[in-house]
Length: 250
Ligand code: 8X3
Image (cartoon, rainbow, N blue to C red; front, side):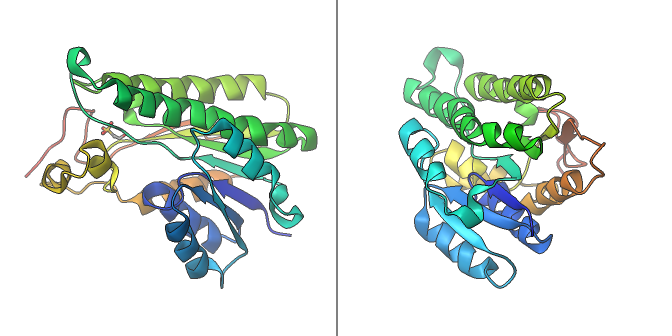
């Protein structure tokens, strides 16, 4: 029987590309997100390749996360692979003028949401003595850059949780690893800049940014290593990017 992977934030960007790559690699899928229509359209796209179950929830809503994951039909209830991908940035403002609603959103989604989903899935992995967890962090979890303050704090938390999970789950047959991407061209900047498409586009101009598929490739690579190999902590950047703030643009 094929393994089942649950992907959060699967309706767009890295999550969507990862779901597609996992379907191609033969995994059965549980695709999660807030936007039911986008998830259903991905489901119909992938249904010829594998079994796909759509789960609609907002990772910020603890009750909803628990209830929805517990409601999975038996065919999908054994989760072998958890991809903690849901996350985004809201705003890019100095600390003295940041919007507290933006701060709440980033901490609630990127940190608390990841915890709620993980808390639902990890116990069954421990019980079976098997599983893979991949946490999608960011270069912002490794460095802090101007005005990145709270986003960066939330991704540093993801980095810490990736390490914490690996420590607590050591000896339990579960691999835990993180991917920390630099600049990936998705709707990330459009969300960060609240729909300002021009400003968002300029982030990816003058060089070749990573594509969501580049991250999806890495997910599949990690999952297909022999069982004794755990890719624990990976930073992936476009060749044009040397650090958060050093990007060579033509
Ligand atoms: C996304 C990359 O550099 O905008 O996490 O923080 S960056």
